[in-house]
Length: 390
Image (tube, rainbow, N blue to C red; front, side, top):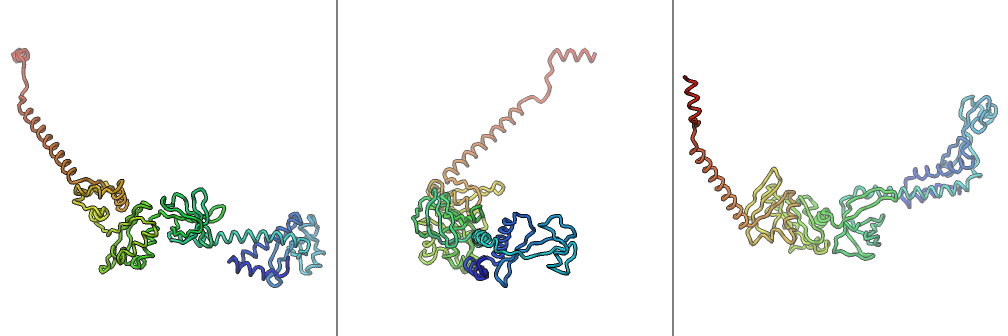
């Protein structure tokens, strides 16, 4: 090999952050591979790294016997005693080989093995670093587009922002900075794959944590968040301190805090609503800015029937049903919205239907009362009866 390897190993460990034991094992494996290749795998060989001299030593192990059958793996007792006087039959004798015959091959093999180990260690290091960061928001630099997907440089690694995780209205150019949510980290054959998202509700929650100290400290808790990326979002918040208004804390002075989040999401409208354990109250708040007249709850069916004034119906439903859809997602219940006039019409129809059923029941009772209760007997049957009695 090339002189003292301790310095080279120390340098690689320092630059690449690879465990020293991994490199030493790679060197031993490379030298052993070169030795086996030279001797065509006919001998029992072992390679060990000598820290003192900074080199890998190769040892050949043979069994001491009286009569040699396999000269590659066995040695005569007399010849063995020349190496070690105390050796006996059946012992395994290790003899160091001269490495000059395969040092060049070993050096080339070691280089390749070290490069491979460095790559594997770097990949493993990146994976271990980011696998515990799922749910974090990271800053990156756009490098390139690949079939609609965005490749983002995070410093130590490159991440993927798939087209399905991009907001339709957002466009990026090379070298643009982007903030995204780490939604998944997985190991593939090409190394660790970090999946980013700009549409995940977790991005909204993380942005509020960074903008609102009360959320970061746990005084205000975000109970839920839903989005239609690029258009509108709703978050439900609750305060664990009676002196702190959760909605006001998230809005900030003159809306400064929520405005920073809106700017990061490129103008996405955000509704901040107070969370309540009472489903009906929570539903009324979730449908804001629309006013609600009354709410009917079906616990078994996990559904709500919400009645709103006629002039509030379109506001409650929202553009293309967006408002009620987000509210239903936030609550986790099905929501049916009706106007006051429509609800009254249905009540009148139900009342009329009920009255009609009552009338029909009365008529059936009257008809039943008019029918004779006894059994009619014809004249023929009466005659036959008299004859029988006679």
